[in-house]
Image 1: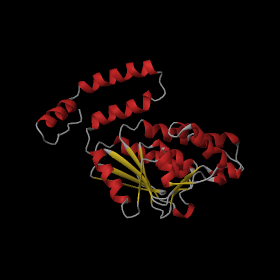
Image 2: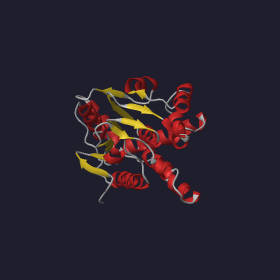
Image 3: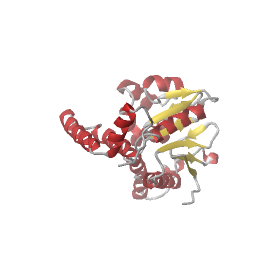
Image 4: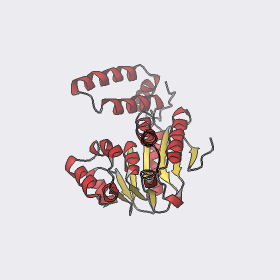
Length: 260
């Protein structure tokens, strides 16, 4: 598929999706969100892809968030409502992808883009990147990403982000749990590549089972979660890859995954 708002490349088991509308600071237009969904679906359906990296081609901005012009556009409310469906669809798609995802935040991550970053499994931030939900300053509110922030950040700190609308730097974002790691500009690409290759080297079938379990158990009752995870473990024990992994460990060699 040809994309107009992003770049999509696959190499060595890693699909890289780069937001590529620098003139709008990668504003999350309907077209960009639609192509982002299509790109993640392509990565999901490609057996050659073992890991997905989401980043930006902009030098300083990952994404400035939603296209504010759409909020005040003179179109029927029902069409605006249909348009916002792309956000939950994308969040669920990333969560249910069956493959690990890294958000390589090489620039500022603001408003709705913060939700996309948090939907990814891991977030690596480049030193100097800022994070925030500034919607309240323009008379809006980050409704679509609120559930993701509360699931990643302590309640009082989330309240501060939502209500004050102020930005925080990458180090503070790391401290409160928004990002996993902060890397200098010189080290950033190497850190992302290292993590992506490590993830791509894991068993694809076990990774899929694990990813599904991570997404599904999050909001389950504790007892229900234990039953569900026990069933997942039994399914994992039926795979050839778990036998290969254990055998390779004892034979002190690298495993040769079959993906089944």
